[in-house]
Length: 290
Ligand code: BTN
Image (cartoon, rainbow, N blue to C red; front, side, top):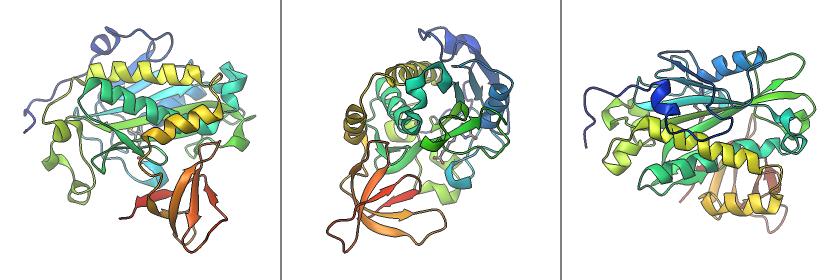
C-alpha cells in the first residue's frame, strides 16, 4: 500500500501520553533534525544526562550504522532514537554489558510484534529482520567514565566494565517508509513495517512500546541468568543453525555453521571443514547463506 504523501509528526505529548515507564523516556528530547541521535545522546550523557534520557529525531543527516556505515534516515518515515543507560546504577548490570545490544534488540522485536501483526526475527547480533529483510538495527556505544565520549565510542565490551560511565542504545527502524523512498542499493535488502504489513503505523505508539520493553529488559538484567538470556535470545535469532559468512574486522571472511550463542552473547561458529574447534565471535557482520 502506498504511504500517504503527508507524513505524521511526533510530539513529546503523543509519545509520553501512554508512557508507564519509571525512567526510560521520562526525559525526552525531540528534534526535527540532528546529525545523529547517538552523537546528541552521547554529548548529553557526557554532560550528566540521567539514566533513561532519550533523544529522538524526525531526521538524521549523518545517521550512524554498525561498522562505520551510514544509516538511511528519511524525515518522519522512520524512528531514530538513542537511549542513555548508566550501568553504574547497578553493579550487576555493569557485569553484563555485552548483553545490552542483544537484549535491546529482543526488546525492540517484542515492541514491534505488540504494535503490528509482524513476526520478527534477529540476525546476530542485533539486526531486526522480517522475511529475511532488514527492518531496523541497533548501534550501542559506550562512553568512558574518565574521558567521556570522544566521537569514537565502541560497542560495549566486557573489558570496559570498570571504565564505562554510560551506554547509548541507538535504535533505527524503518516504519512508514515506502519502497520507492529507499536508495537503490537498499531496495532488495531493506524493508519497513508499512511495506511488510501494507499498513502505516502510529510511530508514537511504537516508540512508547519500545521504551516499555527496553525498560523491562534492562531492569531484568541483574537478576536473569546467562542461560536464560541465551535461551530467549536464541528463540528469536534466525542465525542459529544457518551456514554463515562472517566478515571479521580486518580478517579474511570466516565460513561455517552458526552453532549457538555463548554465555556473553557471542556467536559460536563451527568453521567449514572442522568437526570441533568452535570459534567464539564477538563482533562482525553475518551473512546468512543458503
Ligand atoms: C545498524 O547498522 O544496523 C545499526 C543502525 C543504528 C541506527 C540508529 S538510528 C538512531 C541512532 N542514531 C544513529 O546515528 N544510529 C542509531
